[in-house]
Image (tube, rainbow, N blue to C red):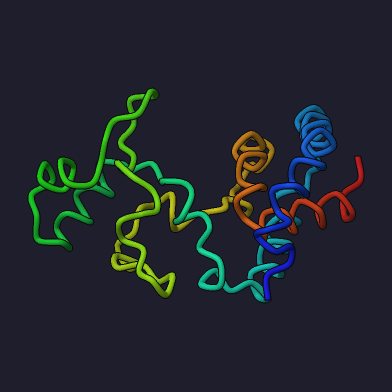
Length: 165
């Protein structure tokens, strides 16, 4: 059972948006020395009790950025030329990055599994990025992920309890 539920997540995230933004602004100004260790522990603890297959909201509502290495690896797996893969699945966004043409993700199956899981993009492997080194540098991404990912929401809520600023 996901907590918070996807139905409640948007409202909860919106209610906490300003509080989280202020918290992250303080975090950037005065970064605790042990931040990455604390974040790794919080991330690991949350994902021991979170089953992403129950949710897959990230795959249903957002698309990852595809690097050149991702495109090479996935197209090879699909036995396509990279340009065929790009033409079939990707578009270039406003930041000049390759992203999916549509969401939900074309590789998401009805049981929330991924057809290309073993070769999925780096952005998918690392989502929601809450265990990333130098976490204070990606707080803007985290703010965007909180309304999408119940685990990211929970990790940030625990972070604020463990590391009051």
